[in-house]
Each structure stands twice: as C-alpha cells, then as structure tokens.
Image (cartoon, rainbow, N blue to C red; front, top):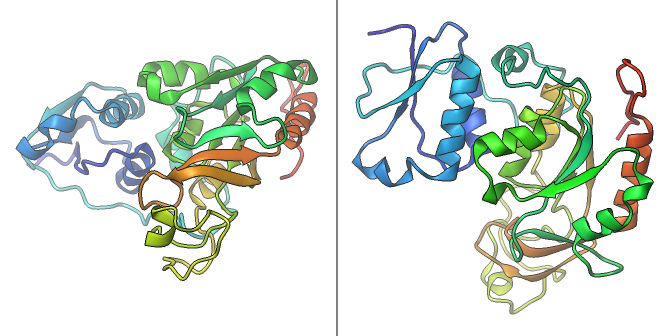
Length: 300
C-alpha cells in the first residue's frame, strides 16, 4: 500500500464539497494523486465540477492527476471538517494556507477589478429592487463610483482555468450564495467576499409542497420542516475567516419566480438593494492602496 498516494473518492458535483473533502484529507507528502471512478461514475468525469476537481488537485499537489477504478489505498481523514452550518469567526487556518499555497495568486497582491458572478437567468439571477434591472447592469451604470474597473461573468460558462484567471486578479468578489463562492480560493489573499445570502423568508428546508407548487408566496410563512432552527448557510462566512479574508453579506429584499427544486436556495430571481451594493463597493474600492501597502477594508 503506497503511503504517499491519495485517492479522491466522492463523486460529488459541488465544488465546495470537493474543497471541504480535500481539506479533511490533505497531506503535503502525497505525491501520487488519483480520482476514483467506476462504471457508475463514467458519465460524470467530464462534468464541469469534476474538471474543477482535477484542476484543484493538480494545482494543490503540483502533479498530474490520474483516474483509477481501484481503491488500492484507503486514506483516512487527517482532521475534522470545519463547521459550515453555524456562524463562526475562525482564525486563519495554517492548513488552508499550506494546501492553497500554489493556488493563491502571487502575481498580484491586491487585485485589479471588481468581479461579480452573475448566474444564468432564472437561476439565482440577481436584480436591483428599485429599477428591476439585472444587478450587473446597475453596477456598470455606476462604474464611475468605483476606483477600479467592474467585470461580471457566469462561472457556468467557463472552464476551471478561465474561472481561475478572472478570479486571480479580482480585488473584490461578489456572488449569490452557492458553490461558486468557493472560487474565492482563486482570489488574492486580500480580496474580500460579498455574498448575497438567503436569510429572508427562510421558512422551510427542504422546501414544503405549498411553497414548491406556488400555492403560497415566498414571503408567506408555512408549517414546513426546518433542518436547523435558524438560517445556517455559514459555509462561505466561515471559509472566508479560515482564509483570512474579509466577509460581507447582503440580505435580499425579495424573490420572484419559483423554487427550481426542494433546496431553499434554488430560487429563480433575487432582488437586492443595488444602491447599498454600489455604496459598499465605493467604500471598499476607496480603501484600496495606491502604494504597496496592504489594504485595510472596513469591518463587515
């Protein structure tokens, strides 16, 4: 049994889960890296999340990753997973620092522009409440309020390499809650995350029949189940702290459309206070350094 081999085994199409899993098993001494698959998994090897897994593993371990259908080594977790369903202001984690040392961009220290991940329409698509226009259009209209350029993208349309490239020079990273926020690991160490959460009208998890079939509106309280008594989507708040990053969140004003599935974050349209975001970006970009000194972002 090769003690320097690591086999990544979970066929999960969620990049946050992939990172979360790697964190538990990571050891810098691993030199032979594999992704396990069997006949059941053949169809997912080319899934975008599995391409992201391969990209991450090759970046972390600086070696070619191969596929295997044999579990010739069983790796045991080396550490407990970090808490992701309760808000904790962790200290910066040296394990993450070691694991991501080849991933964290070093060509630029602070980033050069604002990046918004705007998902596809009717899939957690972000709008401005007051004007009703997509949030990226509002930010483009107000670009003169920012000291650096603004860019937007949709990670769903991008390869892992393209996602890395646009994130690697981001000075500020904005996204609705979801696995895409995991790409903060590709941003410079000083880059904060602005996450649009789903705190408002968090009434059932999984989504109850009444909400799912649009018998009642998003803002109507139901008698459905809740896995946790309070809003618990702390994944990226906690990851930000573990990475030593500033974290900001924006709570939506409302939602429209329907639930895409029984996951309560799977809403079609999200409406936020766009002017609040513009003012926050103005404040954050005004804090960026003009000289080679680390920026001091305002507290969240």
